[in-house]
Image (cartoon, rainbow, N blue to C red; front, top):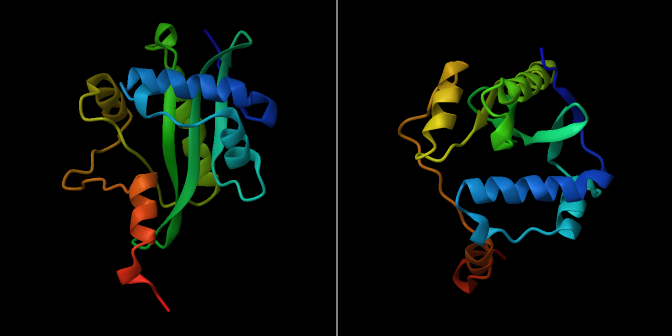
Length: 166
């Protein structure tokens, strides 16, 4: 049986992490929206106020997948939650339980940290991912729509002089 070795990332892994991010962006047909670079990633993941963490799965010393996660808070449970930002397994390694192994690793972290839940989003056209998540007992949250202020919209909104707080 193939054994996936999982480890937390270090600064030296930033080029590899960026490569995985590019691969997931390409798979999700969002490569044209990617603005991250190695310097930004290093600061965000390993700087003084970093919040996100990354794990990488290795098979025979070859990196084959990764997951990015951080902790949020639920007022409904009164507990932290683990939020999975990215989960990606290289296409040639899919269907061999490696994604499930990474999720299991994260679920163990969530339990150890007394999290009330673990959540993530999936693109509505990504049927293989949806089927996979349902197969492990995850439930889609029907009735919820994600809203986002992108960087430009966020700046415009924060600079609105009519809403300045004194």
